[in-house]
Length: 276
Image 1 (cartoon, rainbow, N blue to C red):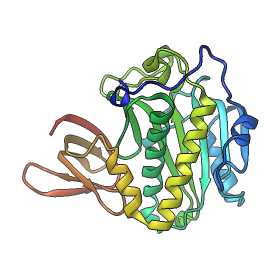
Image 2: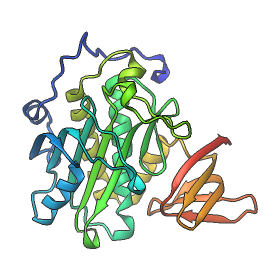
Image 3: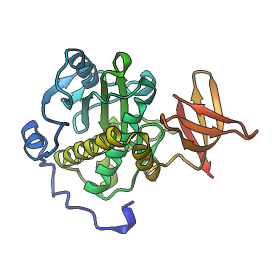
């Protein structure tokens, strides 16, 4: 599915791509994000290394990239398959936000990933609360947020199923996954995609710091796949089912149950049940 039937960008004719540390850095053009790039062939987890680096005060905007992760992780402690062909990176940020508002960085990152996919592939990517990116209802991106004490630093972990073989994706009928390669019928240039991602992330991050929650939430709502739909949210305190109304100033999901009571969900696993 493409956005409004617009022609797809030129994806090239083969797997040759500009996905190197030098290629990303040279053509990036950002002010903060990507000033320093640590490139690894294999890591257990880019976010684990990024958190260690954040503790020793490496510059804000430092990125950790791996061609492959052997112990990638997603939300709620789930394992995240991270074979070669995907985009696995983590960004160190120091947003200066109160801890309750740190999740807004994750929402901004999800919007950045969705916008990058739209502009580089033409696929109509949308965001699912809190930080997933979907195309045709299938998950193509996961965002993981880790924060230090008092949210002094935040590590944004991004996993994109770019050119990942279908056989390497998890088989989950409730949360189906897809790769951009499968959706497009051919490989995507990961260098082009990552540069677009980092530019969009910097734009959203600077807007968040300058304009507060309103700008970040407006951008998220514009691309939301969750709002106005019937959802079931699995939370540590139990399941909540109802209409997803909105997100509040801290990025929490507001769900109205059938009895009319509105619940504020800070963390949980969302399943969309039907179009509202």
